[in-house]
Length: 140
Image (cartoon, rainbow, N blue to C red; front, side, top):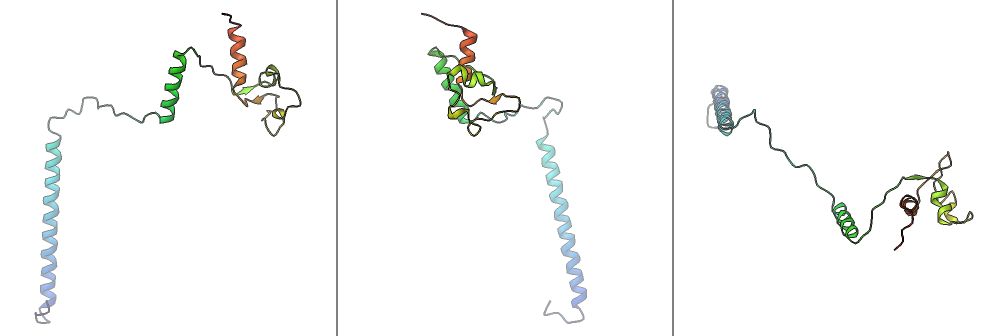
């Protein structure tokens, strides 16, 4: 452009811009045609009415896998898994375990008491008490 005369520069610049735009437009159209043809070719032989392939979602956490394995081993050794409520009475949490009334675990700072007198289970021993009551004594 710098070698052209000043009066020809606007006309030539306009023609070059039009040429550049038309080439870019042609390339874009050709690219779009190639993409459409590629998509059509990829879909040949695919039946959209068939159900999709199930995709596996997520997996268990390694600690969960370890816990499950430990429970399997302990069950084979004769142990049983017991579960109980998270909200207990004071009898199951303390009295049945012979915890004296002045024991520090009974303080409001160590145990969460609910307004109705029940409390959150502070340990798993309450489940042991419930299991012993349900199963009864076993000898031999």
